[in-house]
Length: 413
Image 1: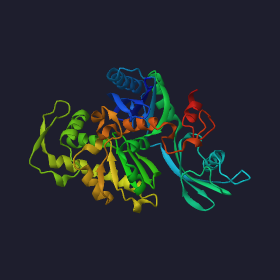
Image 2: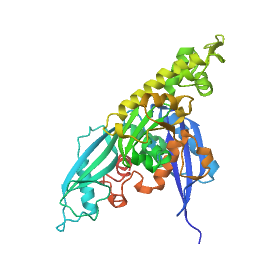
Image 3: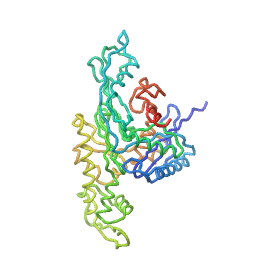
Image 4: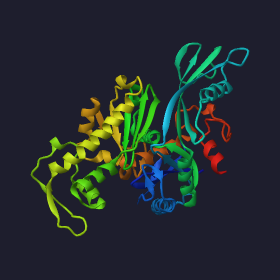
């Protein structure tokens, strides 16, 4: 009997590009990538939709390309969400165990997470993820799954990620206008972590930096769970703007110069090879040295890393990150980025490339596809994707804070 093949689709809606990744999986096998689609992103700024029609057209182009390559139609997608409207907080809930024999059941776990989630959230914000970090049973901490244990008092430490209702709504609306259903909306650094981080790095402590076009996403992991998330509203597009203004050249030419000649650390390049810069409005072309170009890029990249370092240091695990820093996202491909990051963070830095997949894996072995591949892996892990044990979810229950479909179903269905 032939094994049933399941299809998973990740849609990374970025500021500079939209990528769609289709993977197929047979039970027991690793997911195989069968389709990849890319389209320039128009209509987004810093991860937020500013032009709905352009965004819809870009999504359709990326999905069509992936469908043609895979030969399968796409009906529903797992989409990523970022943008500087994302906020995260750590919260704690405490309850008394309800059963007479003091055995902790799934209902107690749901109640303690509900208690941890009872924080004041403004009307214009919505909870995107509630991720349990650890449970504490009668002062015994470090418990990942307390079901079946005995105790009188149960506490939960949770990481709550919230976003602006309108921004989430607009992303969902753009996807639906493109004729697709939103299966899940996942925070992008959380998705990227599935693709580029090793389990031992999560345990030892690691800071993940996804440097995209419009935003830089930060996620800090320690002892196997997420501890802090933040979105910095700066990315590769800011570097391109700096080059365009500094060299007085059109944006598209500045982008091409950055990709071909850019270096984030001026000390790594010599001043000898000159490059030709196009003028604006018919002005004559000029020659500049690569060293001058790098000295324009370095301050902006240093600023991005300094802001990211400030976010990492906001939690008390910053000094304990034995895994150092992992860089991913398109801008991390620039020469000298890892060396500059090592100087700013004073930690070992490596480039994160998506892994854990088969099929067209070689085609996505590139930091630009980290979020897209991560969204597929998040979907493959099913509703366990953000580290929540299965019995803590009540499928389809909209009131359940752990059901990822609940909050945007409330918006749309």
